[in-house]
Every structure is written in C-alpha cells, then in structure tokens.
Length: 75
Image 1 (cartoon, rainbow, N blue to C red):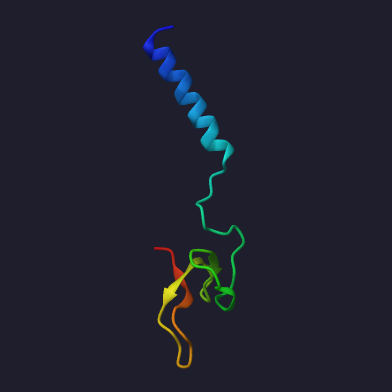
Image 2: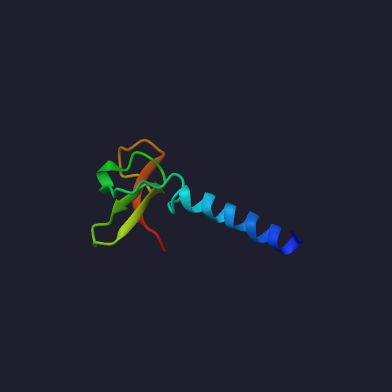
C-alpha cells in the first residue's frame, strides 16, 4: 500500500469517528430553555423575540447575585 492509500484510510476512519460522536458542540444543550431556565452557561435558550440564543453571563438585575446567566443572541 502506498502512502496516499494509507492517508485515505486513516482520514476515512477519523471522519467516521467524528461523525459517530454527533454534530453538536460540547456544553450546548439540544433543548432550548427560556431565560428563567438559564442555570448552565452555554446552553440554548429561547429569546423573547423568537430566535434561539445561548445562556451566558450578563448584566444582573437589581437584587441578583453575580454571576447572572441571561439568554443572549448567538451572533
């Protein structure tokens, strides 16, 4: 077997391994949560305007103890 064939086989095995792990990002929950449910950083949430956002550290409301997780736009 030549070097190019070995490279193709190893690339194919690596690709199969990556695809078998799924196409999601670690730390991102597949089920969106509302702002009130932002308890874990980087989980998906539903923005009041409709599109999906991500729970992340943001500005705290009066009386809240930092760090405060809020639903933020992804882009």
